[in-house]
Length: 145
Ligand SMILES: CC(C)(COP(=O)(O)OP(=O)(O)OC[C@H]1O[C@@H](n2cnc3c(N)ncnc32)[C@H](O)[C@@H]1OP(=O)(O)O)[C@@H](O)C(=O)NCCC(=O)NCCS
Image (cartoon, rainbow, N blue to C red; front, side, top):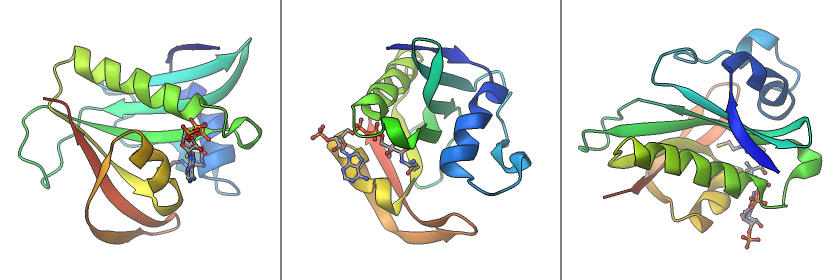
């Protein structure tokens, strides 16, 4: 297993299959994907991309910390789920943010993924909310300092 940086476009096949299944490929493009402070990581088994995670330099008003990062586009191909790859990707993203002196990492988690993030010490803040076409989400975070 190796994790390395990939381009935004390289995330699309996994984003499409796991996060935007049946939707137009354009829905796999996220605002800020190609900003200079955005980084995408891919987890490879030999040459096959099986998991992805993206990190955006984005502050959320829910938090007062100055240096916040947002995780987006966390996905592992279905047949490779439950093998620890998702956790490895989150840890890679965390290390990346820690190297950039982040104070806090946050994201909007799909309801079904909340227990996964809780195992990695992320906490829910506030009530659930609906993201149209995607479903019920919770804001989650971890303070780094
Ligand atoms: C959520 C997701 C990224 C997790 O990745 P994964 O590789 O399957 O997770 P891991 O194998 O690293 O799991 C780490 C731990 O979390 C647990 N876990 C993972 N998904 C879980 C879930 N949905 N509910 C409860 N526990 C879960 C695992 O059992 C494991 O526990 P352990 O450490 O006690 O063995 C992946 O299942 C996925 O892509 N799901 C569909 C897309 C999605 O929901 N993405 C998140 C959008 S916010």
